[in-house]
Image 1 (tube, helix red, strand yellow):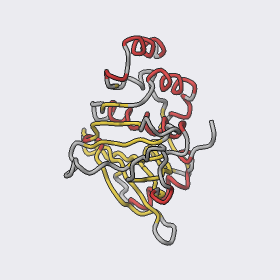
Image 2 (tube, one colour):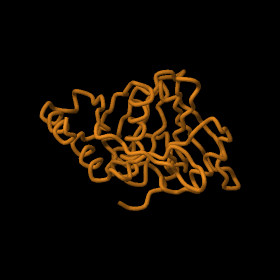
Image 3 (cartoon, rainbow, N blue to C red):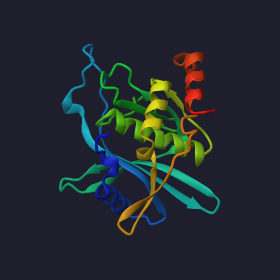
Length: 216
């Protein structure tokens, strides 16, 4: 798999520095493009609409409870990362890959606590399918293992995702912290893809095949 910005230690450190909160532990950081436009009939999105951003997942523990955040960071005029937006993953209700995007690298995240549900959520575009899978699996794992719930997932081929996870298991390991010059990682369990896929998009045969792939 090609080198991902998720493996960029300097990027991770820059995110930690921008947040400047020692109680929050970084899980993953990755470069993306953000847009709010919609696809035209030719299924193309204007380049002028895309803005460089960094998505970073953080967790914060207080006593026996853990809160997980998705932070959006932007670059200042001087090229320094600074916080731009914060979402709590406990409110994440839907993960949708844009099906009319030929690259398969664009997705949206739906949060049930946003004030205006009539405003279209930002569209996030990854640099590769590997980056997309890596980030989404990380988000879903945190939702399941830390928060105890799973959002609805739309537009992702279940079997394809399961195969990708098995083939790229080392890369799906999730950095928990940055100390002494490097990340600390733990392996994602075999059941990492027990996801609440929308029934309309997943046939029973596909579900059974995914269960078989994961050894359930």
